[in-house]
Amino acid sequence: MDLHSKLKNLKEKAFFSSLIIERGIEKESLRVSQEGFVSQSNHPLSLGSSYTNPSITTDFAEALVEIVTPIFHSVEELHDNLFALHVFIANGLENNEMLWPYSIPPRILDESKINIATYSKSNMGQLKHIYRKGLAVRYGKTMQCVSGIHYNFSLSEESLSKLIGTSNQKDITNAYLGLIRNFKRIFWFVLSEYGNSAQVDKTFVTGRENDLDVLNDSDLFKENATSLRMSEIGYQSSAQKNLNIKYNDLDEFLDELRLAIITPYPEFEELGLKDKQGNFQQISNGILQIENELYDCIRPKRAGSSGERPYELLKSQGIKYVEVRGIDLCPNEITGISKNQMRVLDLILLYCFIEDSPMMSNEEKLLITANDNEVIKNGRNPDAEIFYKNSQTSISSARTDIVDCLISIASNMEDGNYLKAARGIKKKKNTFDKNMSFHDAGTLKAKQNLNYLKSLNSENNDTYQDEAKKSIMRFNEIQKESIQDMDDFMNSYNSKL
Image (cartoon, rainbow, N blue to C red; front, side):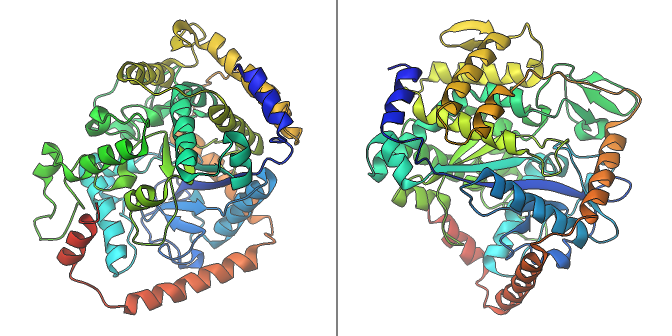
């Protein structure tokens, strides 16, 4: 059945008229000084505890702020919440610090001064810190300061039931796996739409081989790149390249994930689980320390309580939603993503759900990787080609085909803004200013954003302040709890696989 017939069939089932999409966002941004350098101060107490505040936490570094929204059924409400959190943060930052607007970090003169995020004295708090220490010794601190948007997406149980004709969890899991395979098949399109990192400060690649061109005294670039963040100099791991994850079957995926954690990887084994002082610096010496280290553009997910491993949750309960990870921050949006960009993501993910999704072969997996690599480095070149629908074709032609499919889906949506968003998809072209460095351009934009945000009053300010205060109270309670010997705790944690 072709897409047109499938859409007609879904419309007759009232799929679109009753469609409920559940979406949330995790957005990372570096805290920087007025001069644009990564902050060396701890996460501000005015924003609450990074360990217990559900809305504002940290990622790799103390300076890497992570905003976490609740799940919303409305794009407008999601964006409003994300924006309101930015207003609250701008007014809560100390010393006129700002949020860096790009995915690629600013100039980093000495990466040893980047402070790894700390949490609590509790065992789970220490585990979170050790995981980040592991990332630092494996990949270096600079690479870990790359920022982005994670888009969490699912359909309501009723909508999913209308789409796949069943409420059985195994069928739901397989439907999400089909979505994931299709998303990987068209991730090249996502890169072309959401890539915003074709230029980097030279310090970003200090001591690392690269094939970038010189733009000016301080910057490197690739003229037709989409997302250097997703390239080998960005948020990638050469150790993971041999993982044979194709998302054809959940148990197969989990077995591969488990093996990647428990099987020692020589380079990481040589680093040692503990440092010279006898303190843990890795959770495991496998290709992955834990499940979250899997660097992929999309991951199957199910939320659980603190301490429950993603492996256990997926194994026992199946997939609940997907986390889209390959989205660069949009520097022209204070929130890092616009409402229309959210709508286009919804359409892309619906397309991935609706289209047939055959099992992925080893050969197709290699073609997908080749497509991604071509678009990462050369996606703005109109003459560049990828493998699409069983033949070599220009990126321009393939993009047009995907956009037409998204317009077809949007035409059936009750919210007319989706059709406007789909019709508004345009080919992008990179622009570079040789006379202004990447660092200076980012600093200027960060200042403009800060001044604008501080001029606003957030209606949710009291709510976020209360949440921050409660998170500190909860943190103080956790600090008083008994702590298990870390060796015993680590053994227990690793035995859950």
